[in-house]
Image (cartoon, rainbow, N blue to C red; front, side, top):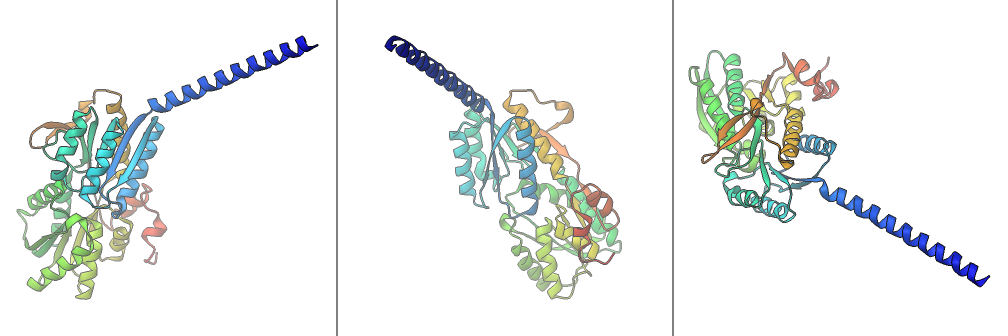
Length: 346
């Protein structure tokens, strides 16, 4: 009887050990599978600008659908914080780091460090000069400036004085947008009588800039704003001078508030940049880079970062006015009709 009992206990312990071994191997297999997942670091300038939240969500969901994991960091407009976050990504041995740069000049060294560590680097929406990144993906920013200039010319065929309120001087996109605007205005009757920049794209600085510009010359007919957030504060300043709706204002990003202003009549146009397409494509290309795939240059061009020719994927922007806002913004699902026309009787 004792022998039988001992035999039963022996069988029980063997089964227990086998079960534990099987469970341990299963857990190890799961851990190895998790470790094998592509790791992407995504560093944002800030989430103050409305569109960046949308970029983040689409990028993350697309990357996850392709089997990658994304670590999102927000620097809140602090360049030292962004450098620290990228250093963290390097330490964590990310496969790819995508960066929405606060100040490209300040990020050159850390980007080079990442690449020297074998990590692929994507300049997302803003080009980092002289860093030799693996990819730059953005909209055609010169075309953005041209669309703004064309909208001002169309709305103001008789010409007149205009103000230009740009975003951060450290943002290479600003240089490109400015070049596009100047190209469009070159043969027009419009004259820039005041220009200013808003550090870190802080919208409240646009309010002060417009007031300063009007103090120098209040005989203006139009205004170009670097984005719709700046336009919101610029129009607030115009309102205090009882000029809102009388001065033609253009911006970019198709923020909901800007679309509302367009149908209300206080903003002439915004440049719609299909961020869903940009973020989705950026995530796809990030995964491709992580897998060591060669990028299909048929769909791309190259751009100089000052020292290197790097792959550049560009998406065309679209001018949005009251005439096509339903088709471009509402029919595409970017914003809902009831939200766009919230303050307008239909």
